[in-house]
Amino acid sequence: MTTFTKIGYSAAFAAVLLAGCATNQQQFTYTAPILPEAASGFTAKPGWVTKKFAVAAANPLATDAGYQILKAGGSAVDAAVAVQMVLGLVEPQSSGIGGGAFLLHQDGKLNGKMEAFDGRETAPAAATESLFIGKDGKPMSFTEAQVGGRSVGVPGTVRMLEMAHKQHGKLPWAALFQPAIALAEGGFKVSPRLNTLLAAEKNLKNDPVAAAYFYDATGAAWPVGHVLKNPAYAAVLRQIAAKGSKALHEGDIAQSIVNKVRNHPTNAGQLSLQDLANYAPKKREPLCFDYKVDPETYQICGMPPPSSGAIAIGQILGILNNTVAPQLPLDSATAPTAAEFLSPDWLHLYLEASRLTFADRAQYVADPDFVAPPAGSWQEMLNPVYLEKRAKLIGEKSMKTATAGIPLPYDAMKVGVNFNQTLKYAPMPDQPEYGTSHISIIDAAGNALAMTTTIEAAFGSMQMVNPFSTANPTLSGGFLLNNELTDFSFAPTDAAGKPIANRVEPGKRPRSSMSPTLVIDKTTGQVIMSAGSPGGALIIHFTAKTLIGMLNWNMNAQEAINLPNFGSLNGPSILEAKRFPASVVEALKAKGHEIREIEMTSGLQAIERTTAPNSTSYNGFFGGADPRREGIVLGD
Image (tube, rainbow, N blue to C red; front, side, top):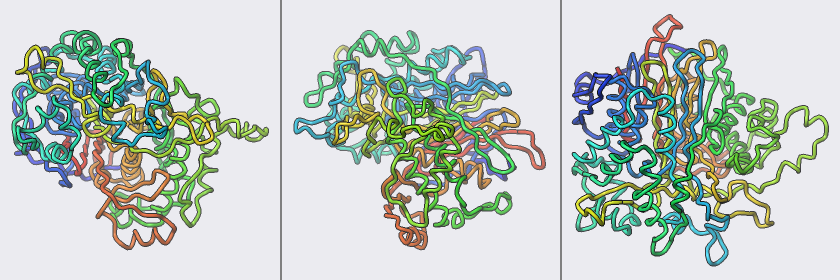
């Protein structure tokens, strides 16, 4: 990759962040740091330079936990376990042990094996395709479906991490829970972001366990800086540390989860003890595609379905490579300015490529254990001939709404296949997607990891589980359950009765937009980038933007993350509020775009390998974290 000039954080700030880090590989001991939380809103981040390893996560306390694990000789997977357990405490609105995750891992050896670990939640065995159809026969509103037990899928994060740790862990499983247990028992300071979200949330207060934990006696959200302790979460983690995922999926904690879901007074769900006990993570083949940026060719890898992320990113990039996109300078000395990047001509092409991509996504992508890929392979949606054909549909004016294509192999197209046979399913109507957190890690042995983790909407189903509330009322707190089933189509069929691929079915994993991404240097076989973001369906655009900024325009990770956000879900053209000049907005409107300027709160994390000046040898790492959230990057 091209050499960049990069800026690290100050030595004084680093000293505060890294105080008390463990160095004994044989026996890890966690030391809680004293560190400030970044403000919510948009806070400039400098980017971070490291030499040996790096970890990026959405909260400084979580990043520090991963750092201390790596410092103690732990692997990337070890660090990810520690980071996730702390995120479930300090960023409970986004992810946790009551949710699901996708993890992409590449062995540190040259041309090492890459694996995709699927910890996505599943629908209960008793679920039916009419789960989100109301008494009036129509699909429920999102909030009506979300809040309560109805939306809760079988959680998969812990069991998936356990699978990955058995293969790639170096430190003992129990040691990885030390940071989260110490912080849960000793307390952590409520961050501006958590306070802001709690203050704005109304439904969370209707759950007695959550209300008692997140709010004071008057019902006000705990203020910024308030030291919040969660002894119930610590007690749960101690059991998982000692007994593994079985402690969560069987026994008293599992019974507490089931009781919470099934006994909701107005919106009960169908989760059972058997559902929890039977949950199994899956190992899948990563979905990879080549991406040419003259003179180099990269391999970009992500999760296959039930994630739509890698397919959608690959389609957007592939379609753009078949357009006459305005070429921006590739020389790092003349890297594009924001104005050049935000050229309305380029944005028009990107937004139209997005429409074509999201039309295919709505038509085809769902759990591959239930839905066959078009033309027999998900790779056919990335077939260069198919993407070239799709790119030709882009004109001078916006198409506003695209329709799905027919991704068949080229030689099948030549022999007169009946294309209509492929359209077995109806396209899924657009509906909200939310939430999530992202972790990127590269350890000292070169093992690389990208993990995106979620409970879906902010605070998930708004249901907090405390297995100890009856026996020991002093153990307050607990953990939140997901609302992941709302990622299924609420309507099982279209008006004509044609089934929707991503409809609810028992044991099925809902379609996801999570896009954990690893980029490979095809010359060396090494991972040169780990990236991803939260943001619901917009995750795809946030991640694609970052890849384009880094690979096409030679921006470093922080510069690419900082770029304004944009995209289309095959409807209006969406631009990040207050980040686009009026001239760009008006030029897009002149091309027929219906513009929506909204807050597009990404939470991008990215780590890249760096080279020394005038060298092709990698000599360290540079990490970036989204200024729109609280994340930082740490490493030695």
